[in-house]
Image (tube, rainbow, N blue to C red; front, side):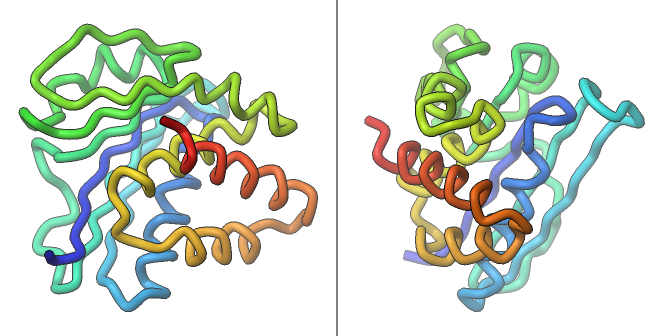
Length: 175
């Protein structure tokens, strides 16, 4: 099976959607994959739309943007309402069920109380890492170890890195 992944991550400014997209892309590059990371965000410092499309492949990435995607992470209700038509039939939808509600659809839904899980490991700011952990479990295109290394490299504060890795692992273990 080819190692490929497309994922659209939709949140609002401050939730860390762009960060987990860049971590995923960097981990893929460390493993020799091709990667694109296309962030789109509003001008607001906090609360504006913050989305990222990440494409990973063993070969070249033909287009960094797709109209319909196989995988989506939704971190905020407003983002679900805005982008719900972007997920393909049969795709994987991971939501932060602490704050997002969705109707059933023609896709696999993983409802993760990500904010609650992040709080249990020390900070609601690690909500994004919980969701990334779930994605890695469901779509193991890059290794958990590579992602942990990137988190450690990107974190200037060792304590923050530890909380983020705990949150990532809790998401990875989520059933």
